[in-house]
Length: 432
Image (tube, rainbow, N blue to C red; front, side, top):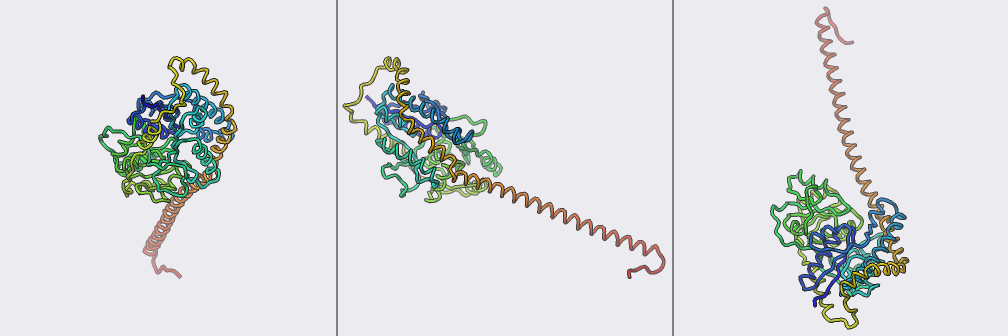
């Protein structure tokens, strides 16, 4: 009997879903069966790929913070986080998978409470961040999952460094590969993240004469996988790490225009290690320059096959202590009871979750994040100031030229009038 692997994705941003879908498809290709879960921003892509996923309570720290405050984010996210863990516990207890592969810390917490073998996928390590609050939040998430997981997969495009956790398994980037060929390939594919917009950049590129595919355009319909479109382009412009991984697997030069704190951190590391195939463009004008002179094509295999092979090999030896499968009727009949019981037991996780919420929301309001926002604002103000100064200078020159021309015309008029007077009046008329 083939093993059943639960695959759960974090709900903030569709990139989490596409990464975990890549792993799900690799597991099925290797002979396993998959149960998907996660919900949130990635649910549409999960459905497009043919999965009917379980949707636990949604959490969205970034939205809660951006539309409120640190306190509002913590107050809203703590109950939602508890609900998400409880929902995952109920789902795992009902389906009884042989293992769970996830990039969602709440699913990881639920797996430890249900004794389900855990495999974690995570790329935002503490070493990415310079700010103390951000690094503390990332360290908390990382240490917990390192301690709980059978294997902690670290998909990266940059070389090994001292910032890598000693217990993490480095693997190539993970991307959802699509096989159908793409017709009418675009010159440039523009892929904004859930929290960024690249519409202005796409407009500038079109005015430069490029054939641009912007997946945020109104007429664009979501597809099963973006990778075939990226593979068919000359360059891809993006903000987030999910598209960076897609570009790495597709072998397409990538221009990174970061918008959020995590994206800034990833961009910093791409520059720090001078990773081939990627160019960082902090400003829109930098994007145009980088597209005109793109980096060489990256070359990376797909790490999804590595994860699938590792998980299924681990599950080949049957566990004599495993709980027998429950029949479907009994599972359905007890689902409500399991959910209620798991919610009660999840109350014990409140102190840990409070720390998670505080660490995460504090990192959202971290000084380095504020500093980056201020630098962007200052840069924008400076740009506007330079524009205003240029306009003022041009207006001043026009005014000065006008005054000069007016004075010259007046002087010429006076000279002409003087000549006419001299001719009209007998005798010598001159200046003393």
